[in-house]
Amino acid sequence: MKNKKSNQLFVIGQDLHIMNPAFVQALDHSNTALAAMAKQQVEAGADGLDLNLGPVRKECGKDNRRIIRAVQTVSEAVDVPLFVSVSVLNQPQAMELIRGRATVNSITADPATLAANMQQANGFAAQLVVLLVRPGLTPFTVEERLQLAMEVLETAERVGFPLTRLLLDPLFHLRPDPMSWQLSRGMPDIDSVLESIALMGELSREKIRTIAALSSSSQFLATVKRKSLHERLLPLLIGAGLDAVILNCHHQQLMEIATLELRLPQTQAISA
Image (tube, rainbow, N blue to C red; front, side, top):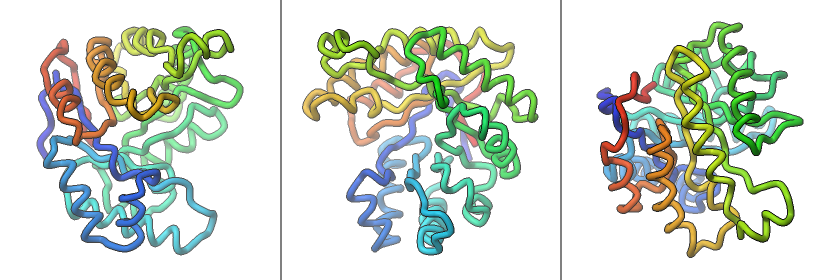
């Protein structure tokens, strides 16, 4: 499996998401349609695919079989890294199908579960996306995001999880005070996210990679405004040093932005 050049943004297709009705239809009724959705995204330029199967009911055999079937169908259809939901991490049979090319997306920075999740992912040579949020702390400032990032790095060092297989998501949040809600009109605090990404590299001697989902930046905006926000936001994220992005790879303007070599060289491409 070929890697991208080290100075290019790693693009992850977002279509295989449980909130996408077309994906749910394919997931429940047609392996052929599911495989086609995966292939279409790779043909559109995706370097990896997000396979978000949502939460699973405990000990539900039907859900477990659906996870295994979805992972097998997509992994056989395309030869790219898969970014799978946490539910897949708890399915050894599914994880074995994608051993060495899986990224678990997303784990929170909850100290009660983070170490165990890292150890579990280690067993499958999987990467981890860690969301910079934990019980009792939803960070809105740069300082709070960096604090959580340091906690994640310390946990990784303690349990022996390689930083080379770690990606941090600083997350977009609405500003916390009511006055800002009115002024921002559904826009998240983008400046804080950009600065956090830019400063993340100062936390360790090793390269600390970052990832963001463009759709999470516009979830409180009207549908007609989301596309233009993504087009304006992606160059800013690239400029701040973002390493990987989950986006609509059928959006031609976004793909043109994502594939431009606008960045300083990185030490490592995103690959599982």
